[in-house]
Length: 257
Image 1 (cartoon, helix red, strand yellow):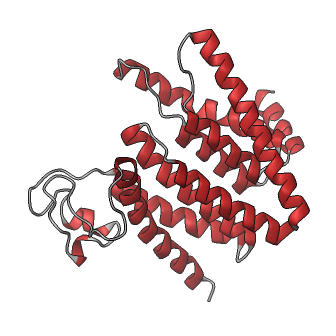
Image 2 (tube, rainbow, N blue to C red):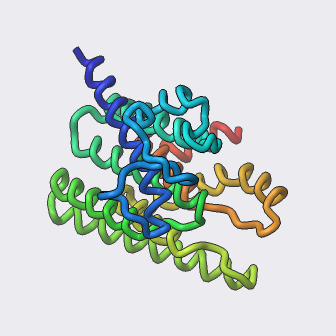
């Protein structure tokens, strides 16, 4: 019977992944996301129902718009498949719980950040605000108001830490080193985890970003690297594994030795 829950969360995730692709493209451009129908970004062709099936539509259309034959981004089916898989993994990890809602919220934020930050180097505030509100409510319902407020303080602490990192980076490199959205994302990190784990997230995100950054630095003359997706990805990894500080350091020491 439990297999139906996995299928349900996968399908919900795939459908939402498709919608997140639309939000991530339209919101940074201040376009209508509620009343307008899905359409081709190139020719404005209104998509039919069979062109909106998550994952499959991309391959049925052979990766092209049926009207203008413009090549569609492979990011869309990857986004849909990835969201579906991560939603199912979240159910496997947390079952039906407040932690499940937090995990699904973080996955949603991750997908939105990927689309908007990669395409426009922008992370709209509403993505962060809505995610923070949902996570805070879940923390209060699960742990009580007092612990929820403590977690809110952790969020502000991580925000302040990232702000200091930005000031240091600006001083050393004599230019803007971090975007404002990256600093705000650290508030979400602190709201979800404790400050020490927040530092681990910052460290892990830097490690994950390093090989990608080297490739981007070679190909991108402007040397602009979207860092937001790496922060949220590191947050997801730590949130999924649920390791404490001692366990993390033990694993690091074992790897080094």
